[in-house]
Amino acid sequence: MSEIGEVIDYLPFAIMGHDKKRRIFLFNKEAEKLTGYKKEEVIGRDCHEVFSGGFCGNRCAFKEGIIIPNFSMIHYPLEFVDKKGKKHMLDVRVKPILNKKNELTGVVATFEDVKTEIEFEKEIDAIEEFMGIVGKDEKMRRIYQQIQSVAKVSFPVLIYGESGTGKELVAEAIHKLSPRRSGPFVPVNCSAIPDTLIESELFGYERGAFTGALKEKKGRFELAHGGTIFLDEIGDISPLMQAKLLRVIQTGIVERLGSTKSIKVDVRIISATNKDLEQEMKEGRFREDLYYRISVIPIKLPPLRDRKGDIPLLIKKFLKDISDSFSIKISHISNPALNALINYTWPGNVRELQNVIQYAMVQAQSNGRDYIELSDLPEKIFSHRRIDLKPPSLGDHRATIDMELINEVLKSTGGNKAKAAKLLGISRATLYRLLKKNK
Image 1 (cartoon, rainbow, N blue to C red):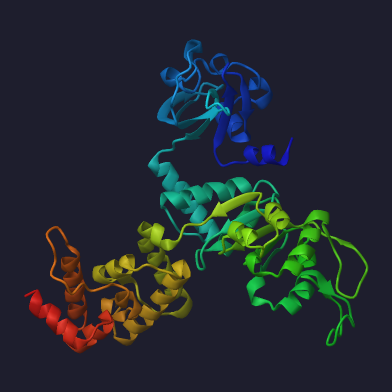
Image 2 (image 1 turned 120 degrees about the horizontal axis):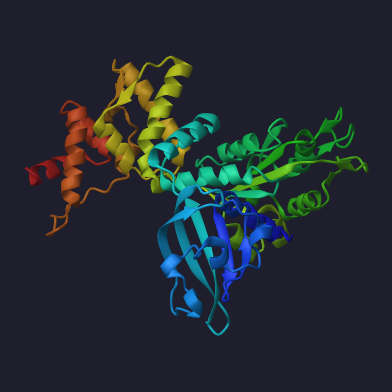
């Protein structure tokens, strides 16, 4: 089986494809698991014959040999009975396969078992407790599914995500769920190691290999033998180092600096980047052959601004963790403060939120409170919001929203306009003008 075929086998959802005669040619492991049928039982057979009318039912694009033209995707729920007679409620998506003449020649269908919300919540809670990753947004649910699926195989994984989105947590979760869990997990921040040192860090060196090398040292690849190496910010390594890394990935062999001895290593490689590596390739800064080696399975982490519904969950976790670790007894956050945090854009993502909560907890404690109030938050939370000085036009509610924020801040400062203006990132004169205008 080709490498692409094996990747399809470990997608986190079931997938099936058939030609215009309804003969099945694609059927992955998740499809086997969900239907109860083995691949060898269905490949080459009529979909309707195997599944008693097929997955599409009355929506079948090839029902009774009649081809339905001009459809881009069919999406529907379906009650399905598997080989053992167990009922499933499936979420089915069917997409057409078109030839060069734009003629329909087959379809590819994905289908997922729709679990009850309670079952899903319990499953996610268990995953969060084990992995340390927090989030119940739909985007994060898919990340959880991907983590569990890709952990089963040793293909290279490339995690995309902005700084602070939790790329290392995801990499470690994959390792913990994998057959390599008893082996080491070795993280390497490629951007933090100078280019002159990264080769010796990754591959090790012999005594006397360079000035200061007083004794031999194993590299990170050797230390990760039998486990996983996590190459964070891989997009920052030099072209020369990219070539050397490619050789190790291709051969599974490292050579320490100052040695000609080949050392065989058995490691799974998980990489991460906050850069667009495809663009880096186009501009000649990243090797194409290395990119395709490390990105067999891509995982894209959403920024915090795209899953704001998870902010209250993250805050709750940080309040507990920080209280337990540092004996700062702050148990909750006021609604105005929570709303301000939800409305912030979070360029530093989850890591920035954690830092803000740490800061706010210290401020709240110094003010003698057991909860976080608006005035405990750093100024940047407010100053990113633009105060509109123009009179609101018909249908424009931005001025109202901004006055709500101003009133919340004034309340938190006990009516002190100088403090409120500072928190809002505007001058006192501007604050007085806004208050006068909106009386």
